[in-house]
Amino acid sequence: MQTRFAFTQAAPPRMGTVRAATRRTRAAPVAGTGTPRSPHDALLVLDVETVPDAALVPADWPADRFPKNAWHRIVAVSFVTADILHGPDGREGYVMTACRSGGGPDWDEGRLLGAFWRFFETGRYRVVTWNGRAFDMPTILARSMIHGVDASAWFCRGSKWEGYRHRFAIDWHTDLMDAMSEHGAAHRMTLAEAAATIGLPGKLGEHGSNVAALVEAGELDRVRGYCETDCLNTFVLYLRWAHLTGRSDAASHDHAILSLTGHLASARAERPHLGRFLDAWREAAHRGMTLQAPRTSGTPDR
Image (cartoon, rainbow, N blue to C red; front, side):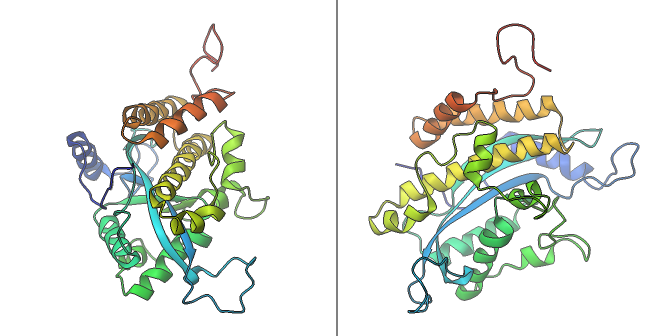
């Protein structure tokens, strides 16, 4: 059974040291560029799972038509967090710190959302999602409004020109599905399709269309585990995209992968779905999990 996590800012001692260092330097420009550093010191890779809210979905709404955002009741909010390490050349490194779900299986939606926003307010996160601009965040915000939950941090942080709500301010909210399609100029992929391109395991046999049945059957822990694996897929895709776009270099990418695989390996005994993800990833990663490590015996492929 999954460990029950409440939204909390508790972290290993080293995390405080890293964040203190980034706070001291975040306002300084990157050496030789005059470009300010990122205002964020951690990634929050986010995903939600929902079921239709029977009280809001109109009786004549077609069963095969996807409900509008506000008509989705949120049953799981899961995330991966990672420290952002700022190098002197302006490039970034990432060290995974957690993969978990908010609250507990017995929490109602209002309590879950209230705890999420309190957690969000305590950090300086760059949010990373897959289709989060169209679904996850509008749904979180709509349901927060329904429950009377304060989400002001989402709206008040940033400036007139950049912030979480600005589509092209990807330093604040990186919707990878949107970014990887050049903001709609190219075809958008599903998360499973994108994951397969770099040898990630994808959904591990689960699917969002099964969530309502799982909740009805009392298998919310399984839903939370599925939501967490979606976050893991998105996190690794972000690492590869960050390398593609020059945010990080190959060595930083590989160090982030090693921090992730180490976390999954250490957690597998208590949280078996993380071990299953790691095993499936190792089996599926036909091009290798890292960029600099040798893919066959012999010299590294650089």
